[in-house]
Length: 321
Image 1 (spheres, rainbow, N blue to C red):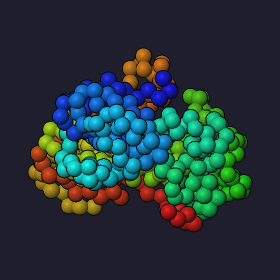
Image 2 (image 1 turned 135 degrees about the vertical axis):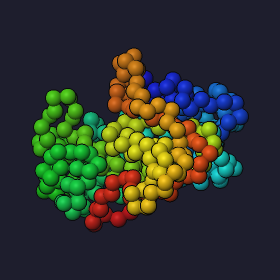
Image 3 (image 1 turned 180 degrees about the horizontal axis):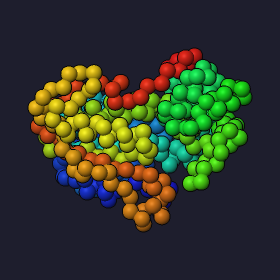
Image 4 (image 1 turned 30 degrees about the horizontal axis):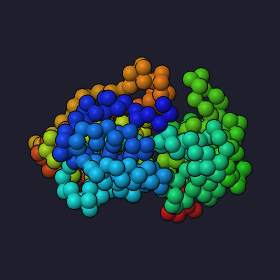
């Protein structure tokens, strides 16, 4: 069950794919959502930037003619679909964050529970988590840990990282966090928030999410469904804010003047997020923190999009992409 798609039944109920429809699975991963969608007779444009996930998808595409597998980022999902010949689609599903496959591969450097190189790159390009730890200014590093990891001891962890440089292994960083951050009563490992922050920065995960939401708004046809499963509060806040603004009249960026009477571009399928059932959380602990939000596209044009208005930004002096 380690690679089970999270809230599959809940996702499928809201995505509601039908024969002949075009659905984008922006985060192919292990292919759980894609396989379920293909079984309905819909065509899937599946996207992933992880080379191992892409290889799995291409192997599946060899036996599934209704699957188009794309090597790329989901922030450009509208462009990927257009290049595959689809100007409009009927659904978009996103399962945001790190996959079980990535956590299970110690050589990828995502997990603090197994020793490996401090990498964390989903696509295999750009600076690694070690590059950030070893090159970033201490104040920038603290800001990163506080903003992307919501780490209360961000300053202390950042100073400890700088003092311990160079850090090249996941175990080194995990042990450092254990020395600096007290174990919490809820059982969260002291390194959890630091690893989360570094992974988000390495892969620009929040930026990709913001771009993906805007891309979905542009490419979904009237009646099209957007379903997003998020696993931590930073992701969920971005999804909630995006959909709340677009489901209300006159919404949009705080940097742009309000447009009175503007027609909402989405209607919410539920006003509150949906969580997994007890049976699923027992069988798949990864599902515990998951929150699903879903909305249906209206006929209205897409809102103006300002990424800086939606997603927090962290500057890392000394680290270049």
